[in-house]
Length: 453
Image (tube, rainbow, N blue to C red; front, side, top):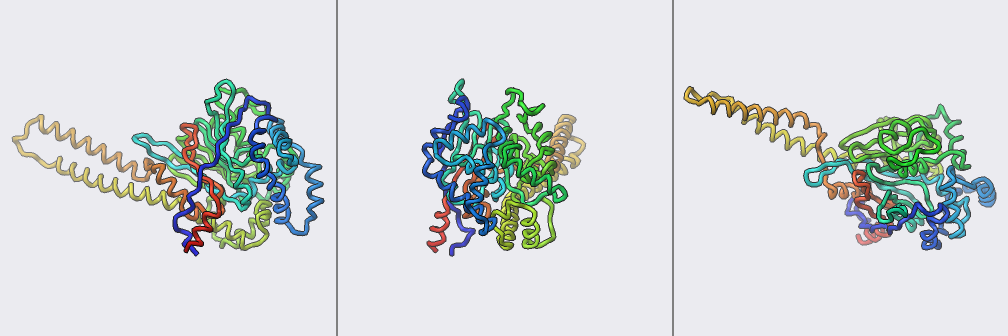
């Protein structure tokens, strides 16, 4: 067996398709659905697999009948019409597509965050993201979608990394805003009724899903039309931070960045713990606060209180592994950043020591024959050196530390952040509104690597 910390899978860039938002919703995805029609048939088997994951005793025929009767639409007419166009093209039942679009966020393991990056003399925050999931057939449906309009078909308004048939947003970017979501395996138990009622309302298309909310953020362009169901649009990071925490949603981790600041939200039904950073921040699949319980005890408690974990596996050890993996991925990325900060601090301390020595030398008496001009010059040099020392002291905490994009890619493609369940990894640049780097992965790359040892 190969060392899991050996070089990771290489991956490949996902195919890119353009979606014309000027078309009627039912026509937007027809061409894409036609191309992926055969591969999308795997959705039928995945639905059965999810049901068996809850309990092998559940009668599949009864579930299909109930789902077909109940799952008829998504929250918005626009998204519902998009799915109807896909359904007609692929001959896949609407209820299967609706299931994909409403439960996917309950099942994903992810690593997301922001890190300050430097290119030349400029620095900005890049948004990194991996998406892990055990459903391998979905890998064949990974695409990069670029959204355009007829008035300027060459101008990409927004970009999403997603699956064919999924019309919400899991990972997206536009000018001055990027976003991603990670599943959260806990919620406020004191609000269980409201929490599970929300799940039911989302499935029935009565309430907006979390991925639909991110889609709204992605398509809420500045200076765009006023939203129909909100007093204020979700067009900027500031507006998102002001409005999203109190919205009724499933438990989830949300990550947003505008290229200057990155924000994470530990989102519950109607609340959120919000954190932000202009330098480095990360979210995986566990809350930020440390917990003294061992992973297996945490996993057992979280599985009891979160339907998503129960769908992944009813086995306590699998749950413990999920929590442990989340900790390992977070620790791996945090360690890379901490190492970067430490090196920067050491370099600045050495430079500050040298500046201090220069100041002390400049303060030495020069004798009575020193001219007034020379003394004035030395005083100015001493003042400048003191300013440099003060500036270095202020920056010793790492606020101005920055990594190169190459370094961030290296961190993102190192085990365990990248692993055999990773579907894709990407780096988004919200300051430009573009995907800076993206790779999708085939688990066979890991098998070949392990088999070669």
